[in-house]
Amino acid sequence: MADKHHGGCLCGAVRYEITGDFDAFFLCHCKYCQKDTGSAHAANLFSGKSTLSWLAGQEQIKSFTVPGTRHEKAFCQTCGSALPYTQMAGKLVVVPAGSLDSPVSIRPNAHIMLGSKAAWDDGLDEIAKLDGLPE
Image (cartoon, rainbow, N blue to C red):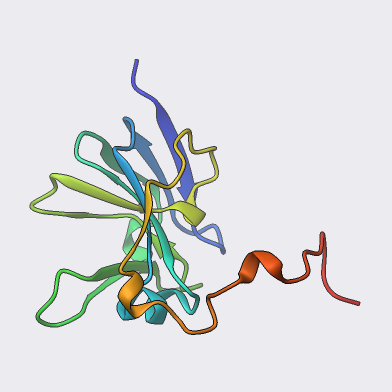
């Protein structure tokens, strides 16, 4: 039986299910991923054999593709959370790792697009680590 993964957006309007395993997990540092996450990198899972099913809120989803590229972002129109989408005529499922509620069984395969890595994304393992908010 195939693995099932569940997830959704921050406001709870959109819910989805992924049936099948993930093939790869990449942390992408390209400028597009920095812009659409507001962070140092995106964390996306990829599968060529999984299926994506919308359980709720599909009408809340908006998608944007950077003109002239394959860079796409799907998101909830209410809260802005990144959501899964398909590429290559539905043959590739792309899942933002942070949108999942269920655990992911694979670890990231690689950091990619390091040529455009944010300048402040160096030595982060050396800064303070807090279990909660700073005081």
